Length: 282
Image: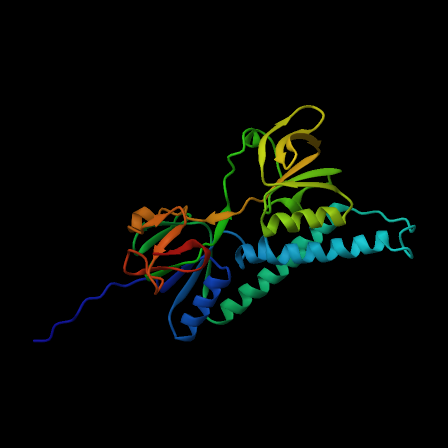
């Protein structure tokens, strides 16, 4: 008498959560190995590399440098120019969408299923995306990072610029205070400076306020405590792992620095792995 061995049936062999460089690389590797693979992405395909950081900042800085050279060159500085900031943001949005669509097409051509939406774990083999439940034998978490929450008194009570929304503002400020000492804060400062905006940078901000006239920043430098009025404040104080997708439901251990993994990228749950900025090697 023969006996059939019953095995669980899943929608996919692997589900990768996040479509940044690490997630895409894993998805393509597994698809090449003939695995049934899906990528879940809450935003545009490409992750923050395409939508927030590398691509938009590269394009914006290239434009700003050209604009600066044109308006300061002895040959062209007296030529009348009119800079329309929404035109730049429209251009960036178009280029981001184009690159994201290309990445999506390449992934789908490799047999990878793209699922749009925000993923939450229900258990170690099941996630919910919207009102759909999707299962997989294994998961790879590649959710990257997000802007660190600020602890500066008063900042939560005002509107401020971040790397996520800098290219969505409607007009250039005359003066901007850039908070942070990161690569991104330096890019933001350079971008505004090249467009003729007055920029002040400091990582030692004590407090911010706002009145009907402007935003007020109290900060420290080598000369002591100072106060300055500006039109806008930009926050770029660094990032932290993005972990907001109910990891506890899958018994995945994590800490502030990221999802705890071993040298093989395996988490505390045997069928779940984490790679990239969201992972923290134990």
